[in-house]
Amino acid sequence: MSLSHVVLRAVGAIAVVGCLGAGCGGPSSDEMLTTERAGERADFTAEVGACPEGDESAEGVAAAPFVASVAEWFEIDLDNASESLAGGFDRSSTATYRIPGSELVAGQDSAARHAREIQIHGSLLEGIDAARQAGPGSRALIGLGGPDVDGQALFLVVMNKSGEFAFAGHCQERLLTDPMTTLLASQGLSMIELVGLTGSELEAQLGLATSGDTPGPAVLNPEFSSLQELEGLTLVSVVISPPDDWRAPATLCTRIERGWNDCMPLDGSIEFPQTVSAYVVPGGSLEFWLLDEAANLMRPIQRLGSIEVAQDLQPSTSVVASLRGRLAPDGGAVEAPVVQAELATL
Image 1 (tube, helix red, strand yellow):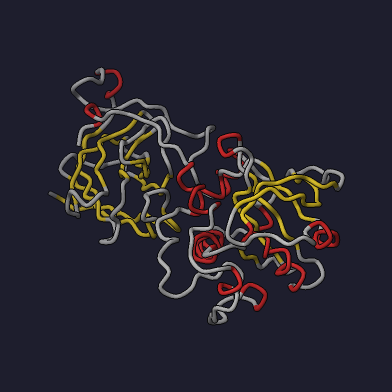
Image 2: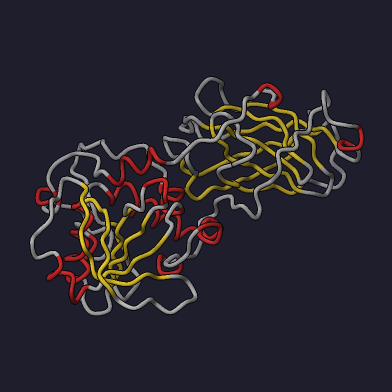
């Protein structure tokens, strides 16, 4: 697939908010909290965000980009939250509640405590009781969205003093807690390190493309690239072999510092392994990126990894790249991506 024939477009993230913020349907929160789960994590998280067996309503959402969309953090004042919510709350719908707490910004002191009106799905508020039951030192934090979702609460995460965490709300265990646990473990991070971060800082911690390192849209193609742009580059064949279950509305591309090479769709329309041509700099690196289904070069989704190119690489040599990780069904991210490569002579 030649990038010169791709129509670029931006893809909004509001559809993800619709599923997470709206609770995704399903049984009531009371029924949800009685679902028996194996003790995979600490006891306090065992029932938080449970998804009843057989409920598939929460499939297809990428956790990391969703968490990275948070615009503001608000820590709930657990000592006074009960009084503020004494009138109860509807566990099945979104409404505005007056919640006591304070805003958090990484590297700054917490703002003075005050009551704030927050639009939030009722099932998320069950995280308040979960935080209390987790014991002294536990916290409950709300992640608020930006103007595109009118500042609505995107999630509520509960943490105990040991750093164990869980996202409250219907099916949030499957949507957020499990994938974020895997992602953070693979990067040697803890949830507490994300609290207060927003924008490019948060994206960088989660391994997503940021405004500071997003590559430009230059495309390396002999049909329209100048001789100066291609000078010193070697054109090689790259055999790309992702996992068999990588099927999603997304695109896999390679690039070097000078620009992008050809891409291939991950929507199931082609079979893998697949061979593409790529310009490389001998002795440099070849990067692998995840893009949306339109191959939007202006907003790549995630850098999956890179491989080092041998200094004496010849045009007759093929680079065989194997990719690993879990591709989200919506194509929004790859959890714990790994890129491995070996050389083969054509």
